Length: 82
Image 1 (cartoon, rainbow, N blue to C red):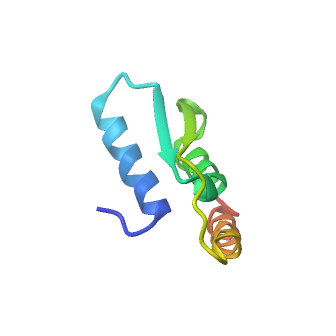
Image 2: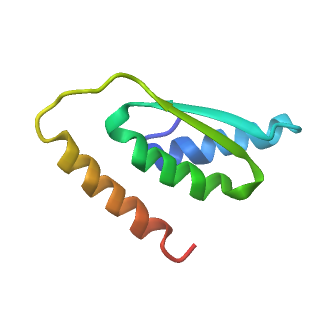
């Protein structure tokens, strides 16, 4: 069980690696969250996998874009030297 997007990507990678023979995955998330999801999953999975992304319908919550931008910056800092 993960508590955040990075954990979700790491645990998903472990599951996919354990399945053997999987080279393509499909990731679905909220549209406002997709930039961060794409960045994190690309970092965790690297070029060994073909990742397709799709998002659900727009989510309208006041201030969500600012929060998401801050979260994306945090993820970029986390992966900066990796």
